[in-house]
Length: 374
Length: 241
Image: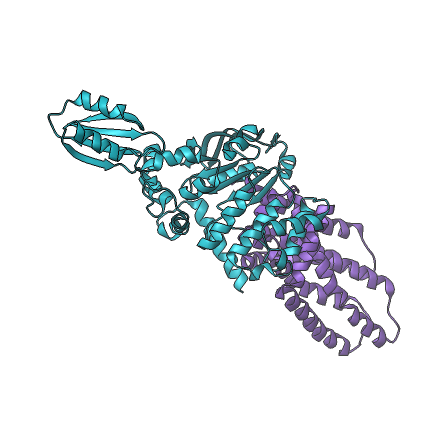
């Protein structure tokens, strides 16, 4: 697949080694290590307050780590901060912009700060890239949230950075805008290394080449979305029960011998959990086989591992799992409309979440909104 | 230097687009004009710069903190500071650039008072002394620069513009009236002398005499540098929190 090829051919652009960050005595990040390669889109997936923003802020040089090292394009983010920063385009979560500036003037300002050569051309290029070419002279304060997000992304692309870091780029957008922004990010694949954070699993699956699942400041899993999907999709695992009397070992052997069956696990009392190989449809064959053998089939149910369950399995964190899944997308192939809904939902779904990091940014976002209206 | 100018020119653009600048500039001219007319139509219509200097200085005590209040607090509130602090520029360039932008705008306001001087020249029967005039304006400019630096300092400690302005005006007032405490401690006592030296107003009014004393200049410059260095430190400390 094109996705994995891009990853394999790449050199490491971000190297994070045993990174920790403490706010006072409490850890926000504990001993995180990972590598991102040139051309790949790496997703940080985790509930609010998991440490996604903290990791990004360390990479961008906004705050230093308490322990460990991070290198961007070979430059240490602490000792060679300025050099590292030159290789990064960053969009913080609240999409901070100056409402009183026009899009063009704002991009010009950021271009000057970043010492972009041939600024006019660069600005035209990124405005085209995010489809805002016709709005150059519009005031940022008058733009919709989706357009502002595009300006924020344009700003991050302006200097042609090797690494682009986007913190929750689709948060607070409507479904159509979410789709557009995801498309925009997908288009960056190959040219840049992109890190994006999200607390929506389907988003990570749709956009990212590789996903790091972060919870409570630790990386709990690292996988490609394909394998993640395999873990998630129902139909892959089936609970089979045969009425008492059937020879357990023989049934097990028979089931295991079926085409498409990967693993068979006896759970006692005539019950089995059958795991199918990738994409194989095994239920009809299972049923036929059992009936042909003259056994009595008493149960045949797909075990749909929901997103929540996978996360729960990895972390044992029920609350975070519920948040991550947003709307239940139990064990089905991800369809665009539904995951877009899932993308909008969790925001208002979890008012009880009091993690400081994200709440603060929400406040900021609200304030920006206020200021803009004034 | 280039980064400094980039930051400063964005700030100047922001001032032109903000109501606060126009309101303050208008207020400055209205108050200044009113008191100016009182001074000049009074008993002796003197061509003395000192009353005018006191007038502008007093108004600046309020105008400068109000002009400076948004400089860092607003960026902290909206989060734009995070983008500046992750761009390849130094924190001090952000702080000094913003101060520079505000200083340019304040200089524009102060330049409008040239009209007053022109009227004064017409009214004064014996003409006007150029020396005190120039030294007064140098003093006024340095005062503005120092007050704005103090404003940047108070703007760095809070996300709230109103709090920043309030703190700024308080700080400025304390410094301004410090020499009054000299009497309380005794004219000749060490504490009293320190009070007099640390105070803003004495140094400022010295410029009205037509001589530029290096002590006054050094005082103003140290106030500027001290405030801005401290503001930079406060900004940097945000990274560690």
